[in-house]
Amino acid sequence: MVNDGGDPWPSIVGTATHDWLAGALESHNREKEPGRFLIEERVRVDDGAVSGYRLSGSCDAYDTRTHTVIDHKVVGESAMRKYKTEGVREQYRIQANLYGLGWENAGYRPETVALAFYPRGGMLGGLWVWTSEYDRQAALDALKRLGAIRDALIALDPEARPRMWSHLPATASSACRFCPWWKPGSSDLAVGCPGDLTPDQATPAA
Image (cartoon, rainbow, N blue to C red; front, side):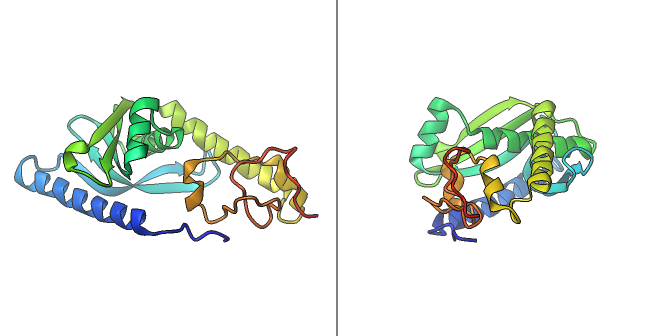
C-alpha cells in the first residue's frame, strides 16, 4: 500500500450520514409501514459461478413496496453538479445493479435501482435521486469482467514478472485518490499505479 487516502473527513461524514439514514428508515418501518424497508442487509452477489469469487455486500436499503434498490451517496457540491448534468459514474451504476442481483439471488424481484445523493454541505432538501430500471445483464457483465481480470492475472503472473503489469492498463478515476495502490507518476506498477496507464506508457522495473 502506498496511499492512505488523505483527509478522512469525507469518509467520516459519509459513515455518519449512513448511520442517520438507517435510523430514519427504521423509524419509518416502526411508526408508519412495518417491514417496508430492508436496511443494511448483506446480499450474496456471486457464489463463484460467474466471477470465480464468492462475493457479497451490505446494501443500504431495499424498498419492498416499490421493489427499489437504494444506495446512499454523500458528495460535495461540484460532484453533485456534475452528476446532475453529465450523469452518474459508471462505477456507481454497476454497483447499484450488483446489489440488485444480490437481492434477486435472495428471492426478491428488484425493478428499479436508485442512487440517493446527499449534499456534504447545505441542507437535506438538496437531496437528488438518480433512478434506472434494474439491469441484470450489467451486473453479470461486471462479474464476468472480474473473472477475466483474475484469469489474466493468473496467466501473466505480474508479481513474479513485473513487466506484465503493462498488459493490465488502469482507467483513471476521480476515486483513484482513495485507492491504496494509487501513486501519481509511478512508472513501476509493482510499486504503485499512476491511475491511467496504457501499455506503451508503462516502463515497469524488470
